[in-house]
Length: 95
Image 1 (cartoon, helix red, strand yellow):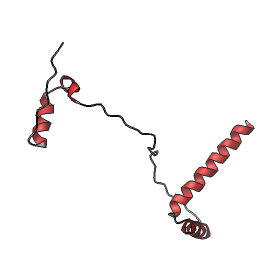
Image 2: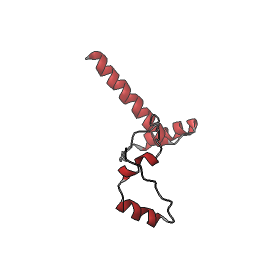
Image 3: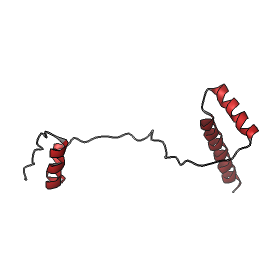
């Protein structure tokens, strides 16, 4: 059985960088602890877009958001998500 190498203590980040440039991680993998990650609450990435709304619609969204004490853009996303989900479910039922 091959003896595992020990990772030295580094005086600086530069020393550590130089060490890993010259050494293979595979020779030191037993020195690392396994990490368990819970990504169940990870939110999907978002993409900024531009949407043109009428002034009255935007005003009403802001009033509704203010009553709920949430940002109006967050409220818009909730409304869009609900409507898209509703439409997709309706199409599934009729198909």
